[in-house]
Amino acid sequence: MSVRASLLPELEEVVQHGSAEKRAKTLRRIANLFLEGAPTFNAQHVALFDEIIGYLIEEIEVKALAELARRIAPVPNAPHGVVVTLAKNDDISVAGPVLKQARIDDLDLKYIAETKSQAHLLAMSTRTNISEGLTDVLVQRGDREVACAVATNPKARLSESALSTLVKRAERDSELAERVGLRSDIPSRLFRQLLLHASEVVQKRLLVQAKPEMQAEIHHVLAKVTEEPRIKSSPRDYIAAMATLQALKKERKLTEADVANYAKNGMYEEAIAALAIMSAVPVEVVDRLVNGQRFDPLLILARAAGFTWRTVREIICSRPGFKPSGQILDVAKENFDRLTVTTAQRVVRFWQVRQDGGE
Figure 1 (cartoon, rainbow, N blue to C red):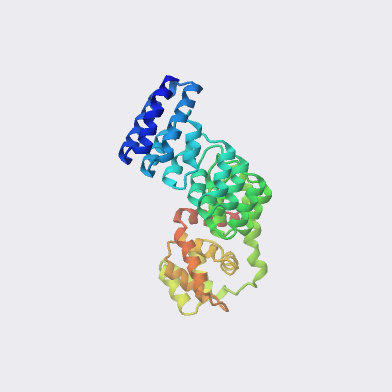
Figure 2: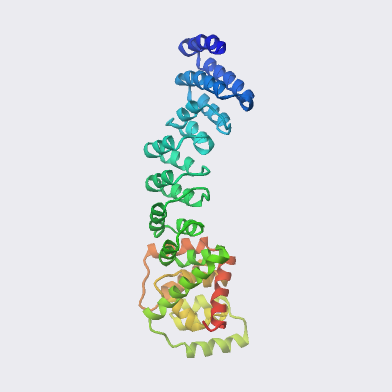
């Protein structure tokens, strides 16, 4: 304990009368002593550094605190009191590093989650082995970014209540829905609820990314969703349009320009027939998909065919008896832009296989 007796008077002098530069230099020197010997220190040694560093950081500038936080955060036996003090700092440059990886008691983490900023919550959401009690708070208080981070973290233990909250929030957030749907711990009941409320784009992405044991469940739910448009709309007559397009196909290859021109000129049946032929999906299926309440199937068919948004917009606006608002078109464009050609083509193959299999 002679180290304590010799250092504390010097520290008090530095704290009371030293410049900001001298205080930072002293803190750095003591931190170096700890970091160099940390692997060999016993609990008594660590407690001594906890007291000394804890005393010094009471009057220290943010820049020096942030440097200290970055350096001690990865250390397994970092001084507990110092770590908690840094974690509770209002400045995220100080709190962030230790909140992300330092050893902190769950009670302290929950207190910080309940009282500090969204930036603090986001830093905690990336920790490993987050308890259910902490994730409950993060999910309830956290904004969209925090919710997505928690849902993406495979080491975050989520209670059924937290998962239910995330599923509810995901009804209005496609990105969150996709991240929650890919969690291995989501109960079947909540997974079905998530799928039924998710956009078609998200449903298809989950199908592509899901593990084999989950794909059967997704197929079952998607089959139900795919049939919904059949019930809600009466079939249109595509006999004449298909005959015209099949004849044209014998003369030359059908193009995106054909579909766009048909839609623009009010020739809806011809536009859908051309899309069906180019997609190799039966026109009756395309009709049911495109005329449902959601535009996602159309986005998928168009993206798989390599169409541009301009053509997709023409098709949407050509639907008989339907005039989309600017907001609806903006949302559709956002989903279309996020959809990859590879994912869309896989989903179209799923529709093709279902028809070939007689389902």
